Picture (cartoon, rainbow, N blue to C red):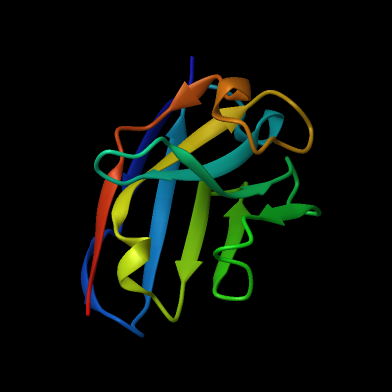
Length: 124
């Protein structure tokens, strides 16, 4: 079992930045690829970014490429999402998730453990 707790969400103006964190506990953190997903009201959960077990490989949704950066610190059991140049359409509940695979996936169905989410609201 892996427990995931997100933090760092909040209200920010368009063009601003936020850094999300996801702290993991329970199992060996480096045994899991990690992903960030988001869900806006009335919409399906969508992929944002993923990172492989040791951080060598990252994948981004086209909508955030060049603005968001995913990283991880295996010594601190934490994955991060640096979000720059935020837009109102980035407003959503952001979740981190753990996947037993080496590289992670863009599909939420492939992830084994989920956090409770942290709200990000971007005002125009």
